[in-house]
Amino acid sequence: QVHVTESGGGLVETEGSLGLSCTASGNIFSVNVVAWYRQAPGKERELVARLRAGSSPDYVDSVKDRFTISEDNARKRMYLQMNSLKPEDSAVYYCDFDLFEGDCGGPGCSRVHYWGQGIQVTVSS
Image (cartoon, rainbow, N blue to C red):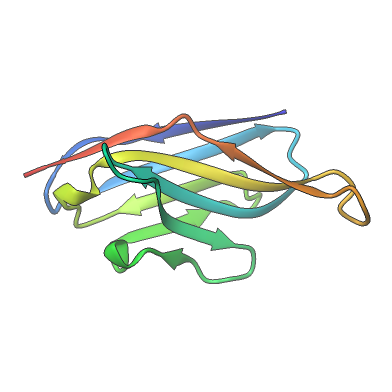
């Protein structure tokens, strides 16, 4: 069993900065991908940033050069640094740990997603 907890978020003015963090605990054997998503009222959930092991991070075009995703060495904590925030960045932000579980040296390996509870980010005009 894996438990994921998010922290950070809140209210910030336009052009301000905000940092989010997300921690996974429990039976974690191998991490495939860590990612941040967001969802605004009336809109579909959107992939904001993604980090694969040994690769450069991916960002949705609207946050490039403003947001930065990172993780700790154990890959059990991820971060999202948000700079130059805009009102359109307002949303509930969710972290996602994409984990390998089972016998991943042979048959029986599976991928399971664990999500944070969601944190509100509001950027005022």
